[in-house]
Length: 78
Image 1 (tube, one colour):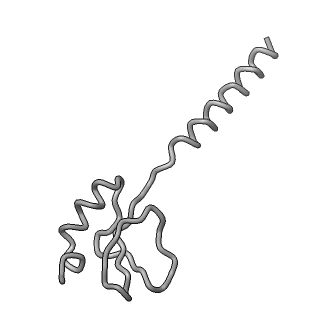
Image 2 (cartoon, rainbow, N blue to C red):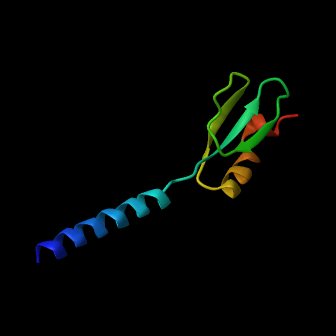
């Protein structure tokens, strides 16, 4: 009986670990390059000094980010 409980505990730990690896939430950012004055969608938070996340520029999907970029004023100015 003890072996069954230990085996079940290890199975549960393995299942939780596998779930935690697949439950990663991806984020997409609308960023503006200060040199070129253009906006783009990236999947990693910018760390440099030339790109900044624009207002409301964090989205859950790339499609949402691309749609949102069209409504952000600083990205639509020419």
